[in-house]
Length: 264
Ligand SMILES: C[S@@+](CC[C@H](N)C(=O)[O-])C[C@H]1O[C@@H](n2cnc3c(N)ncnc32)[C@H](O)[C@@H]1O
Image (cartoon, rainbow, N blue to C red; front, side, top):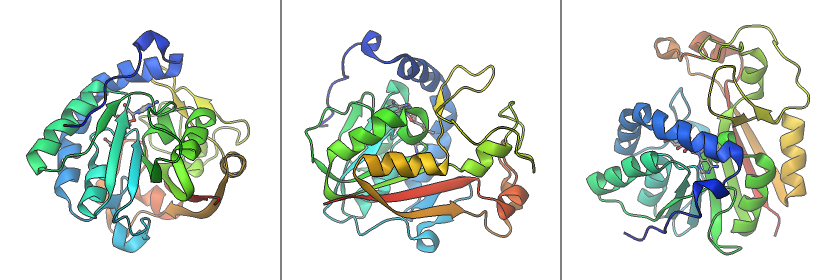
Protein backbone atom coordinates (compact mmCIF):
# COMPACT_ATOMS: atom_id res chain seq x y z
CA UNK A 1 0.00 0.00 0.00
CA UNK A 2 1.38 3.38 -1.02
CA UNK A 3 -0.85 5.54 1.15
CA UNK A 4 0.50 8.84 2.39
CA UNK A 5 0.05 9.91 5.99
CA UNK A 6 -2.73 12.15 7.26
CA UNK A 7 -1.96 15.86 6.78
CA UNK A 8 -1.53 17.94 9.94
CA UNK A 9 -3.81 17.72 12.94
CA UNK A 10 -7.56 18.32 12.85
CA UNK A 11 -6.92 21.64 14.65
CA UNK A 12 -5.14 22.96 11.54
CA UNK A 13 -8.20 22.40 9.36
CA UNK A 14 -10.65 25.14 8.35
CA UNK A 15 -13.86 25.07 10.39
CA UNK A 16 -16.04 23.68 7.55
CA UNK A 17 -13.50 20.89 6.90
CA UNK A 18 -13.44 19.94 10.59
CA UNK A 19 -17.23 19.87 10.72
CA UNK A 20 -17.49 17.83 7.53
CA UNK A 21 -14.86 15.37 8.77
CA UNK A 22 -16.89 14.67 11.90
CA UNK A 23 -20.14 14.45 9.89
CA UNK A 24 -18.71 12.14 7.21
CA UNK A 25 -17.07 9.81 9.73
CA UNK A 26 -20.66 9.15 10.89
CA UNK A 27 -22.41 9.22 7.48
CA UNK A 28 -19.84 6.77 6.05
CA UNK A 29 -21.85 3.81 7.38
CA UNK A 30 -24.73 4.66 4.99
CA UNK A 31 -22.33 4.83 2.05
CA UNK A 32 -20.66 1.45 2.57
CA UNK A 33 -23.27 -0.75 0.83
CA UNK A 34 -23.82 1.65 -2.12
CA UNK A 35 -20.03 1.97 -2.36
CA UNK A 36 -19.63 -1.80 -2.62
CA UNK A 37 -22.33 -1.98 -5.32
CA UNK A 38 -20.57 0.79 -7.27
CA UNK A 39 -17.20 -1.00 -7.00
CA UNK A 40 -18.86 -4.09 -8.49
CA UNK A 41 -20.08 -2.22 -11.60
CA UNK A 42 -17.60 -2.28 -14.43
CA UNK A 43 -19.28 0.43 -16.55
CA UNK A 44 -19.22 3.86 -14.87
CA UNK A 45 -22.61 5.44 -14.30
CA UNK A 46 -23.40 8.88 -13.05
CA UNK A 47 -25.45 10.33 -10.26
CA UNK A 48 -28.53 9.20 -8.43
CA UNK A 49 -30.28 8.08 -11.63
CA UNK A 50 -27.34 5.84 -12.60
CA UNK A 51 -27.11 7.11 -16.18
CA UNK A 52 -24.46 5.00 -17.93
CA UNK A 53 -21.22 6.53 -19.17
CA UNK A 54 -22.06 5.16 -22.63
CA UNK A 55 -25.07 7.56 -22.75
CA UNK A 56 -23.47 10.65 -21.22
CA UNK A 57 -19.92 10.43 -22.58
CA UNK A 58 -18.40 12.20 -19.58
CA UNK A 59 -14.96 10.61 -19.59
CA UNK A 60 -12.07 11.09 -21.98
CA UNK A 61 -9.83 8.14 -22.78
CA UNK A 62 -8.15 7.84 -19.37
CA UNK A 63 -5.61 5.11 -20.19
CA UNK A 64 -2.19 6.21 -18.93
CA UNK A 65 -3.51 9.38 -17.25
CA UNK A 66 -2.56 10.49 -13.74
CA UNK A 67 -5.85 11.19 -11.97
CA UNK A 68 -6.67 12.83 -8.64
CA UNK A 69 -10.12 12.16 -7.19
CA UNK A 70 -11.02 15.04 -4.86
CA UNK A 71 -13.22 13.72 -2.06
CA UNK A 72 -13.11 10.13 -3.24
CA UNK A 73 -15.19 8.61 -0.43
CA UNK A 74 -15.32 4.88 -1.07
CA UNK A 75 -13.28 5.56 -4.25
CA UNK A 76 -15.39 3.66 -6.75
CA UNK A 77 -14.86 6.38 -9.38
CA UNK A 78 -11.11 5.88 -9.02
CA UNK A 79 -11.64 2.12 -9.29
CA UNK A 80 -13.61 2.57 -12.54
CA UNK A 81 -10.78 4.74 -13.91
CA UNK A 82 -8.08 2.28 -12.77
CA UNK A 83 -9.89 -0.48 -14.67
CA UNK A 84 -9.69 1.76 -17.76
CA UNK A 85 -5.92 2.09 -17.41
CA UNK A 86 -5.60 5.33 -15.39
CA UNK A 87 -3.31 5.83 -12.39
CA UNK A 88 -5.68 7.31 -9.78
CA UNK A 89 -4.95 8.84 -6.40
CA UNK A 90 -7.86 9.42 -4.02
CA UNK A 91 -7.98 12.06 -1.31
CA UNK A 92 -10.74 12.19 1.27
CA UNK A 93 -11.43 14.03 4.49
CA UNK A 94 -13.01 11.03 6.28
CA UNK A 95 -10.87 8.24 7.72
CA UNK A 96 -13.95 6.00 7.92
CA UNK A 97 -14.81 6.43 4.22
CA UNK A 98 -11.17 5.63 3.40
CA UNK A 99 -11.17 2.53 5.59
CA UNK A 100 -14.11 1.26 3.51
CA UNK A 101 -12.27 2.25 0.31
CA UNK A 102 -9.21 0.24 1.43
CA UNK A 103 -11.38 -2.79 2.16
CA UNK A 104 -12.92 -2.59 -1.32
CA UNK A 105 -9.44 -2.24 -2.85
CA UNK A 106 -8.48 -5.52 -1.16
CA UNK A 107 -11.77 -7.24 -2.14
CA UNK A 108 -11.52 -6.20 -5.80
CA UNK A 109 -7.72 -6.43 -6.11
CA UNK A 110 -7.32 -2.83 -7.31
CA UNK A 111 -4.70 -0.78 -5.49
CA UNK A 112 -3.96 2.95 -5.69
CA UNK A 113 -2.85 5.60 -3.17
CA UNK A 114 -5.47 6.94 -0.77
CA UNK A 115 -4.71 10.10 1.21
CA UNK A 116 -6.50 11.22 4.34
CA UNK A 117 -6.66 14.99 3.97
CA UNK A 118 -8.39 18.12 2.75
CA UNK A 119 -8.81 18.42 -1.02
CA UNK A 120 -8.27 22.17 -0.66
CA UNK A 121 -4.55 21.46 0.08
CA UNK A 122 -3.37 18.27 -1.61
CA UNK A 123 0.16 17.08 -0.74
CA UNK A 124 1.34 16.74 -4.34
CA UNK A 125 3.54 19.07 -6.40
CA UNK A 126 2.19 21.41 -9.08
CA UNK A 127 1.27 19.80 -12.41
CA UNK A 128 1.15 16.22 -11.07
CA UNK A 129 -2.10 15.15 -12.77
CA UNK A 130 -3.87 15.04 -16.14
CA UNK A 131 -7.40 14.72 -14.75
CA UNK A 132 -9.05 15.94 -11.54
CA UNK A 133 -12.45 14.44 -10.84
CA UNK A 134 -15.02 14.79 -8.09
CA UNK A 135 -18.40 13.11 -7.86
CA UNK A 136 -20.36 14.77 -5.03
CA UNK A 137 -16.99 15.06 -3.27
CA UNK A 138 -14.90 18.19 -2.71
CA UNK A 139 -17.00 19.91 -5.38
CA UNK A 140 -19.94 19.88 -2.95
CA UNK A 141 -18.29 19.84 0.49
CA UNK A 142 -15.16 21.97 0.06
CA UNK A 143 -14.88 25.72 -0.51
CA UNK A 144 -14.77 26.35 -4.28
CA UNK A 145 -12.54 29.38 -3.69
CA UNK A 146 -9.99 26.91 -2.27
CA UNK A 147 -10.50 23.60 -4.11
CA UNK A 148 -10.82 24.99 -7.66
CA UNK A 149 -7.46 26.87 -7.47
CA UNK A 150 -5.97 23.71 -5.93
CA UNK A 151 -7.29 21.56 -8.80
CA UNK A 152 -5.81 24.06 -11.24
CA UNK A 153 -2.44 23.92 -9.47
CA UNK A 154 -2.42 20.12 -9.52
CA UNK A 155 -3.27 19.82 -13.22
CA UNK A 156 -0.83 19.90 -16.08
CA UNK A 157 -1.52 22.38 -18.90
CA UNK A 158 -4.31 20.92 -21.04
CA UNK A 159 -5.47 18.79 -18.10
CA UNK A 160 -9.15 18.29 -17.40
CA UNK A 161 -11.44 18.95 -14.44
CA UNK A 162 -14.72 17.01 -14.24
CA UNK A 163 -17.16 17.31 -11.36
CA UNK A 164 -20.72 16.22 -10.63
CA UNK A 165 -22.84 18.05 -8.10
CA UNK A 166 -26.41 19.07 -7.33
CA UNK A 167 -27.92 21.11 -10.15
CA UNK A 168 -28.64 24.79 -9.58
CA UNK A 169 -32.31 24.11 -10.43
CA UNK A 170 -32.50 21.58 -7.60
CA UNK A 171 -30.98 24.01 -5.12
CA UNK A 172 -33.51 26.65 -6.14
CA UNK A 173 -36.49 24.35 -5.61
CA UNK A 174 -35.45 22.35 -2.51
CA UNK A 175 -37.26 23.10 0.75
CA UNK A 176 -35.23 23.99 3.83
CA UNK A 177 -35.89 20.49 5.17
CA UNK A 178 -33.42 18.74 2.89
CA UNK A 179 -35.24 15.44 3.34
CA UNK A 180 -38.36 16.88 1.67
CA UNK A 181 -38.35 16.46 -2.13
CA UNK A 182 -37.82 19.41 -4.45
CA UNK A 183 -40.92 21.41 -5.33
CA UNK A 184 -41.99 23.01 -8.63
CA UNK A 185 -41.30 26.51 -7.24
CA UNK A 186 -38.20 28.57 -6.78
CA UNK A 187 -37.91 28.78 -2.99
CA UNK A 188 -34.88 31.03 -2.57
CA UNK A 189 -32.92 33.73 -4.39
CA UNK A 190 -30.50 32.63 -7.12
CA UNK A 191 -27.81 35.20 -6.37
CA UNK A 192 -24.95 35.17 -3.86
CA UNK A 193 -24.60 31.42 -3.31
CA UNK A 194 -21.48 30.02 -1.65
CA UNK A 195 -21.50 28.39 1.78
CA UNK A 196 -24.72 26.47 2.40
CA UNK A 197 -25.99 25.07 5.70
CA UNK A 198 -29.24 23.15 5.88
CA UNK A 199 -31.15 23.85 9.10
CA UNK A 200 -30.34 21.22 11.73
CA UNK A 201 -27.49 19.61 9.75
CA UNK A 202 -23.95 19.44 11.16
CA UNK A 203 -22.27 19.42 7.74
CA UNK A 204 -21.45 22.39 5.50
CA UNK A 205 -22.03 22.41 1.73
CA UNK A 206 -21.01 24.84 -1.01
CA UNK A 207 -23.10 25.71 -4.06
CA UNK A 208 -22.54 28.29 -6.78
CA UNK A 209 -24.92 29.47 -9.46
CA UNK A 210 -23.89 28.88 -13.08
CA UNK A 211 -22.46 32.34 -13.73
CA UNK A 212 -20.33 32.15 -10.60
CA UNK A 213 -19.00 28.67 -11.53
CA UNK A 214 -18.04 29.90 -15.01
CA UNK A 215 -16.31 33.01 -13.70
CA UNK A 216 -14.42 31.08 -10.99
CA UNK A 217 -13.30 28.38 -13.42
CA UNK A 218 -12.13 30.94 -15.97
CA UNK A 219 -10.27 32.95 -13.32
CA UNK A 220 -8.44 29.77 -12.31
CA UNK A 221 -7.26 29.06 -15.85
CA UNK A 222 -10.01 26.75 -17.10
CA UNK A 223 -12.13 26.81 -20.26
CA UNK A 224 -15.57 25.30 -19.68
CA UNK A 225 -16.11 22.72 -22.42
CA UNK A 226 -19.39 21.16 -21.34
CA UNK A 227 -22.15 21.29 -18.75
CA UNK A 228 -24.20 18.12 -18.75
CA UNK A 229 -27.53 18.67 -16.99
CA UNK A 230 -28.68 15.17 -16.17
CA UNK A 231 -32.25 14.16 -16.96
CA UNK A 232 -33.65 11.16 -15.10
CA UNK A 233 -34.19 8.36 -17.61
CA UNK A 234 -37.66 7.25 -18.61
CA UNK A 235 -38.90 4.61 -16.20
CA UNK A 236 -36.74 5.88 -13.33
CA UNK A 237 -39.83 6.51 -11.20
CA UNK A 238 -39.13 3.56 -8.92
CA UNK A 239 -35.91 5.20 -7.86
CA UNK A 240 -37.18 8.39 -6.18
CA UNK A 241 -34.59 9.77 -3.78
CA UNK A 242 -35.43 11.52 -0.51
CA UNK A 243 -34.71 14.94 -1.99
CA UNK A 244 -36.02 14.64 -5.54
CA UNK A 245 -38.56 12.49 -7.35
CA UNK A 246 -37.86 10.96 -10.72
CA UNK A 247 -40.92 12.77 -12.09
CA UNK A 248 -39.30 16.08 -11.07
CA UNK A 249 -35.96 15.11 -12.54
CA UNK A 250 -37.61 14.13 -15.84
CA UNK A 251 -38.57 17.80 -16.18
CA UNK A 252 -35.67 19.67 -14.60
CA UNK A 253 -32.03 18.79 -13.96
CA UNK A 254 -31.31 17.54 -10.45
CA UNK A 255 -27.61 17.01 -11.12
CA UNK A 256 -25.00 18.64 -13.32
CA UNK A 257 -21.58 17.61 -14.57
CA UNK A 258 -19.02 20.32 -15.35
CA UNK A 259 -16.22 19.54 -17.75
CA UNK A 260 -13.42 22.09 -18.04
CA UNK A 261 -9.96 22.08 -19.54
CA UNK A 262 -6.96 23.86 -18.05
CA UNK A 263 -5.57 26.30 -20.58
CA UNK A 264 -2.23 25.15 -22.01
C1 LIG B 1 -21.00 11.76 -1.06
S1 LIG B 1 -19.32 11.37 -0.74
C2 LIG B 1 -18.77 11.34 -2.40
C3 LIG B 1 -17.62 10.44 -2.65
C4 LIG B 1 -17.87 9.20 -3.45
N1 LIG B 1 -18.33 9.50 -4.77
C5 LIG B 1 -18.81 8.31 -2.68
O1 LIG B 1 -20.02 8.36 -2.94
O2 LIG B 1 -18.35 7.57 -1.79
C6 LIG B 1 -18.58 12.90 -0.19
C7 LIG B 1 -17.13 12.73 0.26
O3 LIG B 1 -16.47 14.00 0.23
C8 LIG B 1 -15.54 13.97 1.29
N2 LIG B 1 -15.11 15.33 1.60
C9 LIG B 1 -15.83 16.33 2.15
N3 LIG B 1 -15.08 17.44 2.29
C10 LIG B 1 -13.85 17.13 1.81
C11 LIG B 1 -12.63 17.84 1.71
N4 LIG B 1 -12.53 19.13 2.09
N5 LIG B 1 -11.57 17.20 1.20
C12 LIG B 1 -11.64 15.89 0.82
N6 LIG B 1 -12.77 15.18 0.90
C13 LIG B 1 -13.86 15.78 1.37
C14 LIG B 1 -16.29 13.31 2.42
O4 LIG B 1 -15.44 12.86 3.43
C15 LIG B 1 -17.03 12.21 1.67
O5 LIG B 1 -16.31 11.00 1.70
